[in-house]
Length: 98
Image 1: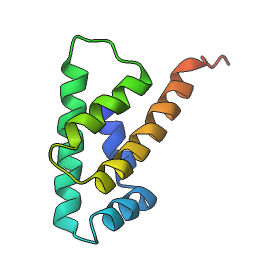
Image 2: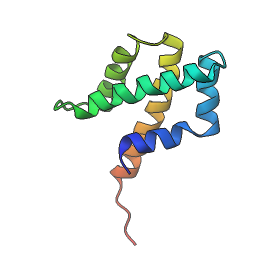
Image 3: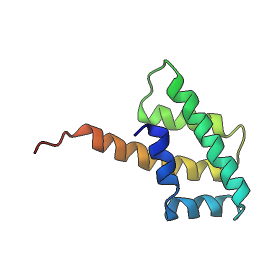
Image 4: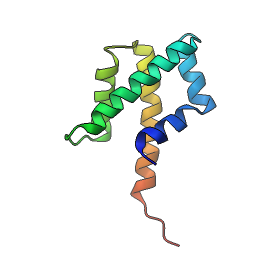
């Protein structure tokens, strides 16, 4: 599964959807816009030839997103991304042997 697909499957969970709705003042159209901004920011970072640490990824996302969405919305997105990045690092960090 590619990272964007993983991200948006996770974004559909009830907790993250509720957090986004709250940050967007319960405006479903705004949530869609914020998700689109997040997807665009992540896509730009993933297409880059630069190498980013987990901290750098969060900083880059924040910088890109604050041009188009509020700080409150960006903070929720970063919280979601941070959780996903750490869970992905854990999954990739240890190999499972049967």
